[in-house]
Image (cartoon, rainbow, N blue to C red; front, side, top):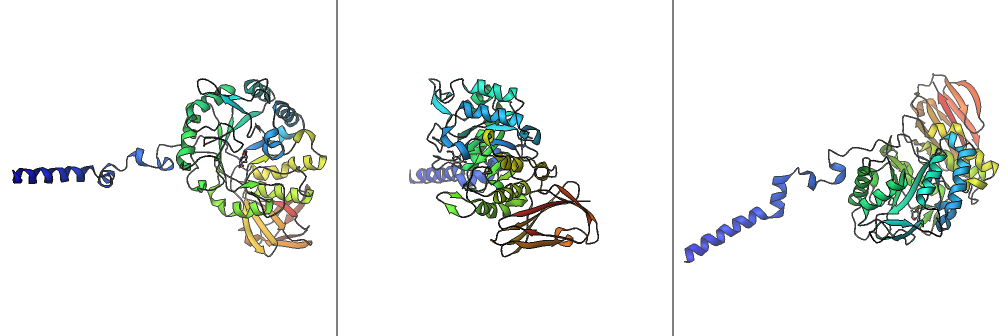
Length: 410
Ligand code: GLA
């Protein structure tokens, strides 16, 4: 009897050892079901956004006061003021468009703000030759307290595709202990399953370092907290333009065609900065291959704002097919030199003066990785002036908080 019991105990111990999770894990690896989504060898990028997305988003100017008239007026403006021809494509409604979920769990639009419905609005935007974007959240609620997509991911993706959505910005409020990579991969897969090409914009503020895992999950990922229409510093949970720049800059190696660092939407034209500062903001975003998503009232903007957003020379730097994010190559106190390699073998160069007095800033060709003797064609991208062929070095006087931006072409 004692002997039989002894066998039984030994047998059970052996069985238990086999069932121990750590052991079975080793035997089963590599099982795709145990891999993080970004490590699954079968995962492919969606092939969209081969240059940084361009468009408009309602949040920076209208916040929760967005409605269908604002969106229609914006689409009309973009289609008629030159923005569409310059490349602005996506018209994106941020937070607060949501109504309740219907009896089957499908999300509906807020009928007082969008009485004609989002399908009609999408059709209108498409009729202007533009694309339609929308906003949701990986948690139970959006940051504005509307219904989030948690637990409704596939259902929401189907609804967006039915409306004709071309772009989804997906936020990170009310997510509790959710794992960001899993949550974003789930919505990425849901969007893919609709069969409709939908650009996927991750908005988890850089908390879980999406640049390390999101290149095949989404097309752009926020790298920072929210931008605000101020020059520098932290303001509540938001950051001024020059502070955002410093957080986004070091991430340059992670950007490329189809997957971009997103230092948040533009504040150009919202009134908090000077035009000089807005030119710097726009130039830095362009040079960092950031999405160029206007965040102002484009239907009622000043000629100065329009001239900034419509600078085709600067936009061409941003949209260059090589898709390299430019970065800082020299810093001397408040004076900085930034460079972006271009597909033609040239460089876009930004001289940036963070200080409060005018200053001369310059760079040698060798610092840009070019031979000193090569004569490059130089164009001033804000003066819109060709400066002829130049060897060795370029320098210029730069206004306080200002930039001089040039393009060097072979
Ligand atoms: C977060 C995002 C913003 C905006 C708001 C909407 O703060 O970071 O860009 O979408 O939510 O509530």
